[in-house]
Image 1: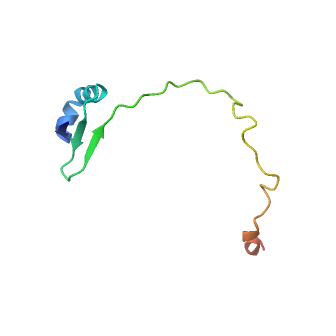
Image 2: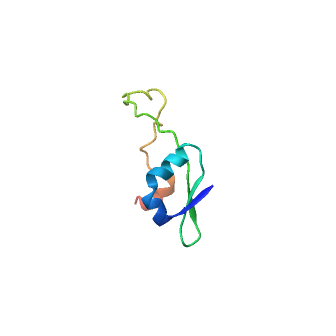
Image 3: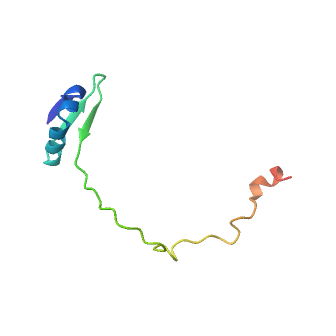
Length: 76
């Protein structure tokens, strides 16, 4: 595992990202004792959205817009 200071990481960011992508553990440590671990994450390709794809999966009750009993005293 390689550990770098923030200053060093700023100068070598491309290399650190490459190292993390190849499976190496890379830590970037701050002066006050915390650190950040670089971990590769697969990026999903953005697919075009299809309108109506959730049709039939979402419903709303008939009394959705009715006043709630809890607020009766505030309603006048």
